[in-house]
Length: 333
Ligand SMILES: C[S@@+](CC[C@H](N)C(=O)[O-])C[C@H]1O[C@@H](n2cnc3c(N)ncnc32)[C@H](O)[C@@H]1O
Picture 1 (cartoon, rainbow, N blue to C red):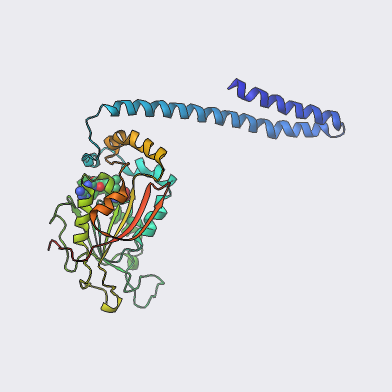
Picture 2 (picture 1 turned 90 degrees about the vertical axis):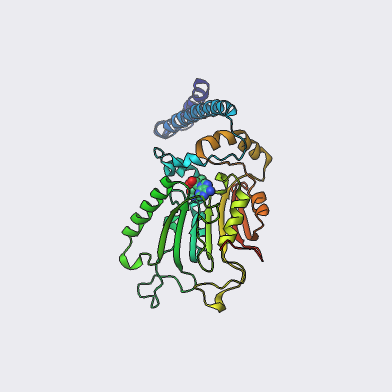
């Protein structure tokens, strides 16, 4: 610290002396001003720099120690670590809030779920981080209150699923609290279900007549041991190409079936970042119950679903997909 701030402090004094020599009339005034305004800034920068260096080295030491401990864990890549989500003592929202803000994920979640229409299923919903982002206001034919979605874009029913009962309890409490805050006329008037169970197992989530129009899955592929099979099953739960929609008028149905909206995190475009993800993967999976180094593009192509749209953000580590069921797939009705 000494070697950093002493020369800067001296530099300030020199400026004062030069001013005093060149302009005797107002030199004292200016020197006083420099002392008041530049001095504290230099000190503040030094303290800030020192704290940052201290925090950085503390973080680096803790991180490398945790990596060494994790190296001895008996965890194969993509092993099932989803039991971490059953821990009642943890506040999962608080744990991910900072990183989600840093990666601007809320805006991406909002944009994705606003494409949800008709019979909606959100699988592996966790604590319900997307809940507040759905537009669940009821259809209002006369648009009296200036709210309400059109007949074609409204959500008619919504089912939230997670295999952890702890997560479903939290999501349900969040949903009730959000609805209670809304004026009565703007509360959701469709059917709402909360369903505990492994969404990858056939029959756990019953397929409604005509299938789901929209299936939402955010940050869940990282937690699935067999993610391609999981996505394939979501394709079966979706309305199939050519299948009649329960609620859309035939002229508004493009005949391509329902859609699967995916927001995921995984491998980057860059090998230096992938090395960091690979090195920390076991440690992260053991604590957070998710493998952050999966190649989501690979998972999607193995699922056989049709890619309608794909976008990547945050050095390629955030994946946004709109997927459709493939033609001719069997459903598990
Ligand atoms: C990383 S969290 C994501 C939570 C939430 N979707 C979000 O965006 O914040 C992963 C969640 O997937 C759930 N999960 C993992 N495997 C599952 C499965 N086979 N069926 C249903 N939920 C599952 C976990 O219980 C956990 O709540």
